[in-house]
Each structure stands twice: as structure tokens, then as C-alpha cells.
Length: 301
Picture 1 (cartoon, rainbow, N blue to C red):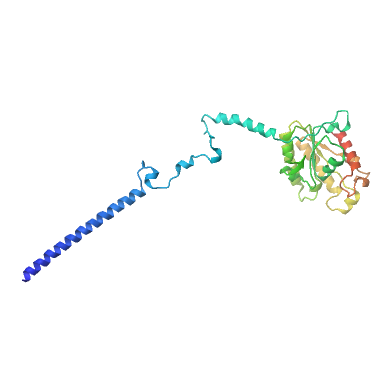
Picture 2 (spheres, one colour):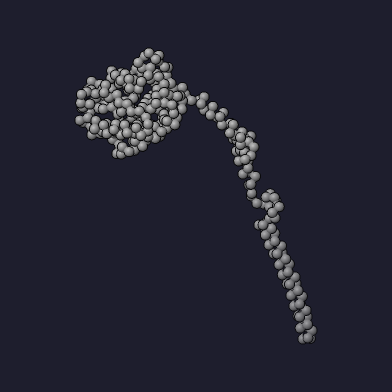
């Protein structure tokens, strides 16, 4: 009986072991199949499309044109069409030219005193603004504003010209000028370094030459102040004016442009702006703006 019982137990153990082995093998086969499928998803074949692989690849979108540029082509270098792009450039330039404002005023007959200001652009600060308002010179173009400084002009600050907001470069692009007169320096007398003033001034001259190669450029002297202003102001005084004018003369020489100084018609025997010419010691009244314009006209003939 003991032998029979042991024999049955042995057979039962064999059967259970076989069943367990079969289950284990099936589990291993299942795991292996799942692993292969996972690897397949992670490393799709090279010829498999992005859609079938399940990856979010957006390569086709890189070549898509923006919605605003539909119908346009951007030819690569060396491809046909590059020449067409070059040919289109003059058309764009022509459109820009046609949109430029007309800023030149009506010219005067040559027999009139102020005819010398025909085709002239005058650039400057509040003193030039007074010249524009009171001198009677209506046939010149002006770029001027109160508190204007050379750095603002050179950097492209805009002013209102005939109802349009223009920079000096807009005006230089808008028309051809025979003469360009620059009158700055009053508001820069208090700058810590005159070198900064001269550097900005030189850059403006270079830009004017670039845009108006046929124009004669005049750098106008900083006009003196009255004696009362000179004696009461540590910045706006004739010692500073003289110092700036000496440097402007050198700048004009270095840049190959003209220096003009109309002060002789506006000062007294001691070199001060005549008292009757101004109420604040700096800006000229209407009477003396006309004298200024007449004397300057003689200098730029």
C-alpha cells in the first residue's frame, strides 16, 4: 500500500510540474512577443510611413508656405527664378519713390535776393525755426524744431513738415538740393564732451554726402548770445560759442565742406548779440531774422 501511494504521488508531481512548465513557457512566449512589439514600435523600419509608425513627425509642414505668402516662391541660390527676384526690385523701389512727400517749396525768380535759397534745405534747432518763421525765406525747405540737437537729427528723429512726420533722411531722399545748411550747437553747449558733438556732426555730414552728392554743404556757426545772457549763464555764453565754432571750423575743413558765419551782421563791437535783436539773449526777433537771412544769402551765393 505504501508503494502504491508513493507511486501515485510521484505521478501527480510529474503532472503538476509539466503543467507548471507549460504555463511558464506560455508566459515567456507572451512576454517575448510583447517585447518584440514594443521594440517594433520604438524603432520602426526606415520605409515605414510616419502615419503607420504612430510617431508625430511634422516634416511636411516645414516646406509649407505661410498663409500670407501663398502662391509665392522663394527660389534657392542657383535656381531659375533668382533673376526674376532681382528684376522685381526696381518695381519696389519705384513704388517707394512715388510715395515720398514733396517738400520743396516754390522757387523765386533769380533776380530776387532770396532766390539764392532756391533748392536749399536748412537744418537746425529753435534758432532756425525762428529763421523759418520770421526771415521771409519761403523758398527754402526746413528741418528744424525747438530743443533739437545733433544726435537727435543724426539718429533720425522726426519733425512735422507740411503735415507729415519726417526725419532729415526722409527729406534728403525726397528731393535733390543744391545747398544744405546745418545750424546746430546751441543746445549742445552744455554737453560734457565736445567730441561726442563732433562725432555725431561728422556722421550726419557723411550721410548728407551719401544721399546728396551734388549738394554744397554749409556748416553755420553757432551765433553769439547777448551780453546779459553771457554774463548770467555758465553754459550759454560766448566763450563756449567760440570754442564750439573753432571745432566746427576744423570739422568743416576735415570733411571738405563750407563754414559760414553770419554773426558779423548781428553783433555789436564787442562780439555780443545786439541787445535790440533779442528778448531772451539767444533767439532773434523778426527784424534781425531778416538781417540774418540777407547776410547769409550773400555768404552762400
